[in-house]
Length: 265
Image 1: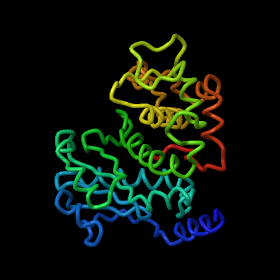
Image 2: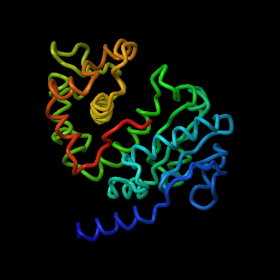
Image 3: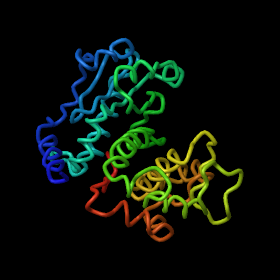
Image 4: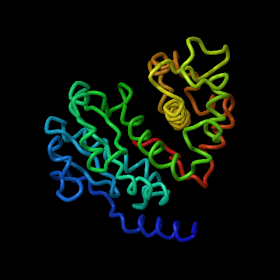
């Protein structure tokens, strides 16, 4: 059965057209439910990036390019992990992009779920900051979609977002213990101290994996960025992740999972 699934995944990846990043109207068919809210869209290996009418096209295209570079990190025109892409397509994964945070909060996700789309990740244009002067939230939000809707489902015992998985064991070490709820104060020595009390255990797994991957790839090392994140994440460089958190470093650099090895540029 596993062999059949892998054949299906590779066939799916082979049939996925190389993205041209062309912005088009939202298509009819199963995506018609998005037409009430979004007026533009880009197809990235079958994963859709939707934008509202006021979303700047350049920023919508930037998000699509980052998505493509995370999925096809070696840029050979084929997604690096066909099984993860297959899971994203199976779950109808999509990015929902609005012009600002207020517009994002007004989106009716219930309407998308009623139409069978449960695997969406939101982002707004004002936090989409290509250029390097400030941190670009695209590096975070797009990766959340890929790990939460892809890796966590394809490798449930490894990247599953629940207690007992390999990722969760790493999380518990990073936080200084297993906490179902965000503690008022983390133990001394913890290097992941996320304080958003609305973020449950699964959410903490998602956030922790993002920090580990992007720090290893060099996204968090700038001086101003280190100052911004110091209250919740201490291992801002590849060397710090490798030496202070060797378990997660070994996991995310294991070639068999084909996680990104370089930062989208």
